[in-house]
Amino acid sequence: MIKNNQYKFSFGPWNISEGYDPYGPATRPPQAFDWKLGKLKEIGFDAMMFHDDDAIPDLDSKSPEQIRKGAKELKRKLDDAGILAEIVAPRLWFSPMTIDGGYTSNDPKARKYAIERSKKCIDIAKILDCSLIVLWLAREGTYIRESKNCRTSTDYLAEAIDKMLAYDKKIRVAIEPKPNEPMDHAYIPTMGHAMAIAFKTSDPKRVGGLVESAHAILAGLDPADEMEFAISYGKLWSVHLNDQNGLKFDQDKPFGSNNLRSAFNQVRVLERNNYGSKGECVAFDVHSFRSTKEEHCVDHLSNSRDTFLRLVEKVRSFDNAKAQTLIADRNYQALDQMVIEHLLGK
Ligand code: GLO
Ligand code: MG
Image 1 (cartoon, rainbow, N blue to C red):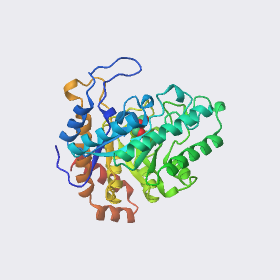
Image 2 (image 1 turned 45 degrees about the vertical axis):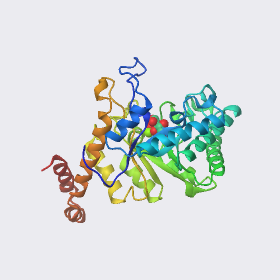
Image 3 (image 1 turned 90 degrees about the horizontal axis):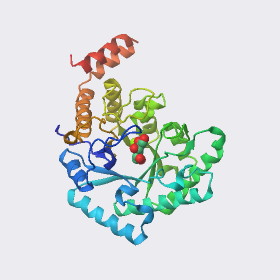
Image 4 (image 1 turned 180 degrees about the vertical axis):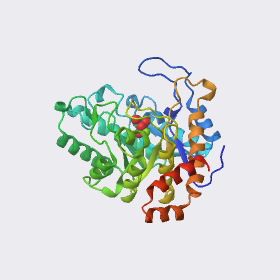
């Protein structure tokens, strides 16, 4: 394990997964939550991400009292392990109520369900001492564009966020944009959309963004630029580092697996902006390859962390003064080669 005393690392229970895909069943046995928590600590991570129902399984069938009790038990477990809860995200894409989306569903009952569920998510986050609610807007989009109206949907999304902000004055909401999958088109596909919707809400200071590398690539954008764009608004509140080989299904490959240079540039942006200094975590939203054996089922996480820390060293040893001279001379040809040679270790 590479030593680290600057960055706080995080992953979610779903990142230790069983290997099923739309074409075949699991290839690894499920692991219990306590086992995952133990592993998280063992491989040098500091925080855990949660969906509301990772924290409280079968959330919809539980009473407020049961939810409170379960959340307190979980908080005790995390405290005993010395692990923080980084985020809590309402999982609005599993329920039969959200088949047509949550906040943007055409059915008012479904929209109401989505808000109520988001409030439960906030209740859980409060007990876990976590102020960051993440919205990955999985089904807030369309399969066919004629089925919804973008203007109405945008208003619904801003209204839903307003209701969350009003429900608790301390929470902040980070939107995790993704252009597609499971939908054909999603309503908040990029960080630009996320920033814009923040300013449509009643308290823009409390609405920000989370960049996932793979999602930016799926939108045809550069993950490092998506991050620094949010940073320019003071709104990069988390990152889901991973990798993606072009325009395919969302692959959630280990960080740096596909494009080491892009990974270097993402770390460079985080470093030069002092990311982490306000408590932000570096989260890896990565998955094992389906072929991975049980005994290697957390290697994608520890490898991503190691790659990140190796790239921090690469960023720090990059000759910025020389790069500036080449930039001043408009010699991007030499700058390009300088980056390549630096990454090659020459
Ligand atoms: C899927 C998303 C998903 C979210 C998670 C937390 O594409 O990346 O894993 O990050 O639900 O909001
Ligand atoms: Mg993600």
